[in-house]
Amino acid sequence: MITTATRALVLGAIPFMSISAPAHAQVSTAAITAACEVQSADCQLLVQQAIAELQASELSDAEYGAALARLSASVVQAARNSPASASVAAAALRDVAAAARDEDQGQAVLQVADVVEAGGADDVDTVPLPPASPA
Image 1 (cartoon, rainbow, N blue to C red):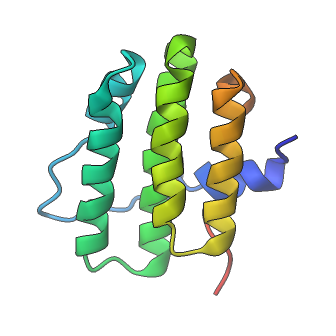
Image 2: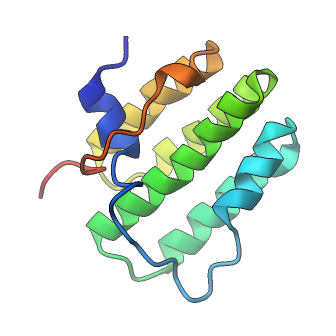
């Protein structure tokens, strides 16, 4: 069972933190959500592209964690909107988990991927707590 603390660790900062995307970022979370909703191979490709852009940016660990949280939330939203896309969304979430700088956040994203793949995207909430472990 995924706990509230785990959900917060993964997706928490979305509602209250304003983290600007790098100036060169080309992938929008809306595009990711749309691609993931239709079970497209583009889902995972867009997530991987967004991760590459984030990794190339000069974001602090906190900003990077928040950006991954926002990215995760867009994938989870796709699975909520289209439950048939659960396996595609879970694969994309595993890519996000692998890219996490914070081990706890990475593990939490893996847990969310498992929940989403099992059809439980509606069980993942986005409570407004920090996305990564404190330094």
